[in-house]
Image 1 (tube, rainbow, N blue to C red):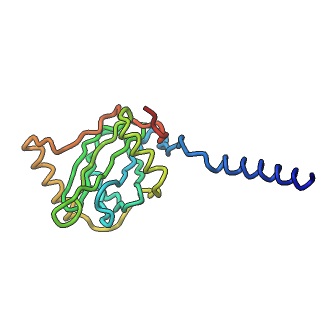
Image 2: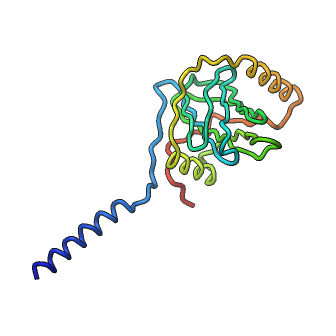
Length: 191
Protein backbone atom coordinates (compact mmCIF):
# COMPACT_ATOMS: atom_id res chain seq x y z
CA UNK A 1 0.00 0.00 0.00
CA UNK A 2 2.88 2.38 0.80
CA UNK A 3 4.38 1.71 -2.61
CA UNK A 4 1.07 2.45 -4.32
CA UNK A 5 0.81 5.81 -2.49
CA UNK A 6 4.37 6.67 -3.54
CA UNK A 7 3.61 5.81 -7.15
CA UNK A 8 0.43 7.92 -7.11
CA UNK A 9 2.23 10.89 -5.52
CA UNK A 10 5.09 10.56 -8.02
CA UNK A 11 2.59 10.40 -10.90
CA UNK A 12 0.77 13.54 -9.67
CA UNK A 13 4.06 15.45 -9.27
CA UNK A 14 5.30 14.41 -12.73
CA UNK A 15 1.93 15.29 -14.28
CA UNK A 16 2.01 18.74 -12.64
CA UNK A 17 5.56 19.42 -13.81
CA UNK A 18 4.90 18.36 -17.41
CA UNK A 19 1.72 20.41 -17.49
CA UNK A 20 3.58 23.53 -16.37
CA UNK A 21 6.41 23.07 -18.87
CA UNK A 22 4.06 22.13 -21.71
CA UNK A 23 2.27 25.48 -21.55
CA UNK A 24 2.77 27.32 -24.80
CA UNK A 25 3.90 30.92 -24.70
CA UNK A 26 1.00 33.10 -25.80
CA UNK A 27 1.95 36.45 -24.28
CA UNK A 28 5.26 38.21 -24.81
CA UNK A 29 6.23 41.61 -23.55
CA UNK A 30 8.39 43.73 -25.82
CA UNK A 31 10.97 46.40 -25.04
CA UNK A 32 9.58 49.89 -24.62
CA UNK A 33 11.45 53.06 -25.61
CA UNK A 34 12.95 55.48 -23.12
CA UNK A 35 10.66 58.41 -22.30
CA UNK A 36 10.22 60.61 -25.36
CA UNK A 37 11.96 58.19 -27.75
CA UNK A 38 10.69 55.74 -30.40
CA UNK A 39 11.67 52.09 -30.71
CA UNK A 40 11.88 50.17 -34.00
CA UNK A 41 12.13 46.39 -34.25
CA UNK A 42 13.66 45.20 -37.52
CA UNK A 43 12.98 41.52 -38.18
CA UNK A 44 14.63 39.24 -40.74
CA UNK A 45 12.45 36.58 -42.37
CA UNK A 46 12.11 34.80 -45.69
CA UNK A 47 14.76 33.68 -48.18
CA UNK A 48 18.45 34.43 -47.88
CA UNK A 49 19.22 32.45 -44.75
CA UNK A 50 22.96 32.79 -45.36
CA UNK A 51 22.82 36.50 -46.29
CA UNK A 52 23.02 39.31 -43.73
CA UNK A 53 20.88 42.33 -44.59
CA UNK A 54 22.55 45.68 -43.94
CA UNK A 55 20.07 48.04 -42.26
CA UNK A 56 20.26 51.85 -42.18
CA UNK A 57 18.37 54.84 -40.83
CA UNK A 58 19.12 57.27 -43.68
CA UNK A 59 22.88 57.84 -43.16
CA UNK A 60 23.27 55.79 -39.95
CA UNK A 61 24.40 52.20 -40.32
CA UNK A 62 22.32 50.20 -37.80
CA UNK A 63 23.99 46.86 -38.41
CA UNK A 64 23.81 43.62 -40.33
CA UNK A 65 20.89 41.39 -39.40
CA UNK A 66 21.46 37.67 -39.79
CA UNK A 67 18.83 34.94 -39.87
CA UNK A 68 17.70 33.99 -36.39
CA UNK A 69 18.16 37.56 -35.12
CA UNK A 70 16.22 40.80 -34.99
CA UNK A 71 17.46 44.34 -34.43
CA UNK A 72 16.10 46.75 -31.80
CA UNK A 73 16.79 50.42 -32.49
CA UNK A 74 15.87 53.35 -30.23
CA UNK A 75 15.73 56.73 -31.94
CA UNK A 76 14.26 60.19 -31.87
CA UNK A 77 10.62 60.42 -32.97
CA UNK A 78 9.74 62.09 -36.26
CA UNK A 79 10.60 61.45 -39.90
CA UNK A 80 13.00 58.61 -40.75
CA UNK A 81 14.13 56.83 -43.88
CA UNK A 82 14.90 53.18 -43.18
CA UNK A 83 16.55 51.17 -45.91
CA UNK A 84 18.17 47.82 -46.35
CA UNK A 85 20.83 46.56 -48.70
CA UNK A 86 21.31 43.09 -50.15
CA UNK A 87 21.31 42.32 -53.88
CA UNK A 88 18.99 45.32 -54.08
CA UNK A 89 18.02 48.26 -51.85
CA UNK A 90 14.56 48.78 -50.40
CA UNK A 91 13.16 51.80 -48.55
CA UNK A 92 10.57 52.67 -45.88
CA UNK A 93 9.62 56.24 -45.03
CA UNK A 94 8.54 56.40 -41.40
CA UNK A 95 6.78 58.91 -39.19
CA UNK A 96 7.43 57.81 -35.61
CA UNK A 97 5.67 59.08 -32.49
CA UNK A 98 7.36 59.35 -29.11
CA UNK A 99 6.91 56.49 -26.61
CA UNK A 100 5.83 54.11 -29.38
CA UNK A 101 7.08 50.79 -30.80
CA UNK A 102 7.13 50.02 -34.53
CA UNK A 103 8.07 46.91 -36.51
CA UNK A 104 9.65 46.53 -39.95
CA UNK A 105 10.18 43.14 -41.58
CA UNK A 106 13.29 42.75 -43.77
CA UNK A 107 11.91 39.91 -45.82
CA UNK A 108 14.32 37.95 -47.99
CA UNK A 109 13.32 37.50 -51.63
CA UNK A 110 14.90 35.19 -54.17
CA UNK A 111 17.34 37.23 -56.24
CA UNK A 112 19.28 36.58 -59.43
CA UNK A 113 22.53 35.67 -57.66
CA UNK A 114 21.91 36.28 -53.95
CA UNK A 115 18.81 37.10 -51.95
CA UNK A 116 17.15 40.46 -52.31
CA UNK A 117 15.38 42.30 -49.50
CA UNK A 118 11.87 43.70 -49.25
CA UNK A 119 11.26 46.06 -46.32
CA UNK A 120 7.68 45.80 -45.12
CA UNK A 121 6.23 47.84 -42.25
CA UNK A 122 4.09 45.57 -40.08
CA UNK A 123 0.59 46.61 -39.07
CA UNK A 124 -0.61 45.62 -35.57
CA UNK A 125 -4.16 45.31 -36.92
CA UNK A 126 -3.21 42.59 -39.42
CA UNK A 127 -3.31 38.96 -38.20
CA UNK A 128 -0.44 37.86 -40.47
CA UNK A 129 1.79 40.74 -39.33
CA UNK A 130 1.10 40.06 -35.65
CA UNK A 131 1.85 36.36 -36.22
CA UNK A 132 5.21 37.13 -37.87
CA UNK A 133 6.17 39.45 -34.99
CA UNK A 134 5.11 36.87 -32.39
CA UNK A 135 7.10 34.07 -34.02
CA UNK A 136 10.28 36.11 -34.47
CA UNK A 137 10.27 37.46 -30.90
CA UNK A 138 9.57 33.96 -29.57
CA UNK A 139 12.25 32.15 -31.56
CA UNK A 140 15.00 34.57 -32.58
CA UNK A 141 17.77 36.39 -30.70
CA UNK A 142 17.68 40.12 -29.96
CA UNK A 143 20.44 42.33 -31.34
CA UNK A 144 20.54 45.85 -29.87
CA UNK A 145 21.80 48.70 -32.05
CA UNK A 146 25.25 49.98 -31.17
CA UNK A 147 27.06 52.69 -33.12
CA UNK A 148 29.46 51.37 -35.76
CA UNK A 149 32.71 53.04 -36.79
CA UNK A 150 32.68 51.33 -40.21
CA UNK A 151 32.90 53.75 -43.14
CA UNK A 152 29.72 53.21 -45.14
CA UNK A 153 29.75 56.62 -46.88
CA UNK A 154 30.05 55.25 -50.43
CA UNK A 155 27.20 52.78 -49.90
CA UNK A 156 25.07 55.49 -48.26
CA UNK A 157 25.69 57.96 -51.12
CA UNK A 158 24.63 55.37 -53.73
CA UNK A 159 21.54 54.45 -51.72
CA UNK A 160 20.49 58.08 -51.28
CA UNK A 161 20.87 58.66 -55.02
CA UNK A 162 18.72 55.59 -55.75
CA UNK A 163 16.12 56.82 -53.22
CA UNK A 164 16.06 60.27 -54.83
CA UNK A 165 15.61 58.69 -58.28
CA UNK A 166 12.65 56.68 -56.95
CA UNK A 167 11.13 59.81 -55.38
CA UNK A 168 11.59 61.83 -58.56
CA UNK A 169 9.89 59.14 -60.65
CA UNK A 170 7.05 58.91 -58.08
CA UNK A 171 7.79 55.20 -57.72
CA UNK A 172 5.48 52.99 -55.68
CA UNK A 173 8.51 50.99 -54.49
CA UNK A 174 8.86 53.08 -51.30
CA UNK A 175 6.80 51.73 -48.40
CA UNK A 176 5.33 53.89 -45.62
CA UNK A 177 5.29 53.30 -41.88
CA UNK A 178 2.63 55.57 -40.44
CA UNK A 179 2.52 56.84 -36.88
CA UNK A 180 -0.58 54.76 -36.03
CA UNK A 181 1.16 51.40 -36.75
CA UNK A 182 2.22 50.98 -33.10
CA UNK A 183 2.72 47.60 -31.43
CA UNK A 184 1.92 47.14 -27.75
CA UNK A 185 3.18 43.54 -27.41
CA UNK A 186 4.20 40.43 -29.33
CA UNK A 187 1.34 38.23 -28.10
CA UNK A 188 0.21 35.22 -30.07
CA UNK A 189 -2.61 36.47 -32.32
CA UNK A 190 -6.03 34.87 -32.31
CA UNK A 191 -8.61 34.99 -35.07
